[in-house]
Length: 240
Image 1 (cartoon, helix red, strand yellow):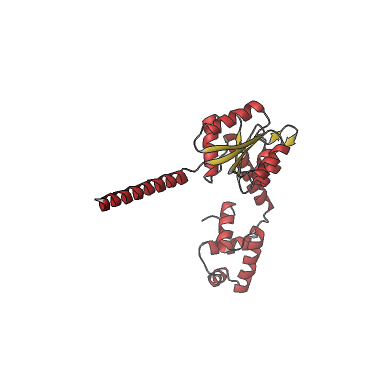
Image 2: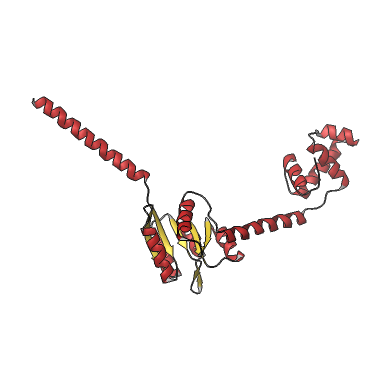
């Protein structure tokens, strides 16, 4: 009888330990992320704080209204994400982005001009939202940022797209034009011809082909046949 009771007690203890371990694993899987809010407008700061505190995925790690207190907060707290307004009165919140690393920074700001957007992205911000975004979009963007994505408001995405297009145009303008002979060589290489085959088809020496290829690489600012063909085709220099 006593032996039966001992076995029952042992089994009950084992089950209790198993349940405790399962609950611990569930808590680990359901991670809560610590977020700092830096916003100079009190009403907006309170609204964002309530938004975070009401969500089960987030814990409010602190708030700040100016650069000095925000710097102190970032230095003293452990957190996963900084929700940052760039315009803090007469000061810029830009230095906080690098200071917050390795935590992620998501900018939420009225400043939607290209200069501020590019400065924030170059400083390390993982995303940029304008303040006219609805609450559910802000929450989703915080989740996206923490998951490794790059949330952007449509206006911000437009700035970056125009920047990329402008950079491509500037790069194309900076490329030196290829000579007629260089274009011939590149066209043959694009078809898969070897240096020897190209030399034979153009009735020039293989050393001359090598010289032209070096010139092509230099002018197109590339280092391989594939890159040269891609760049020339993209710029309309050659066609297949």
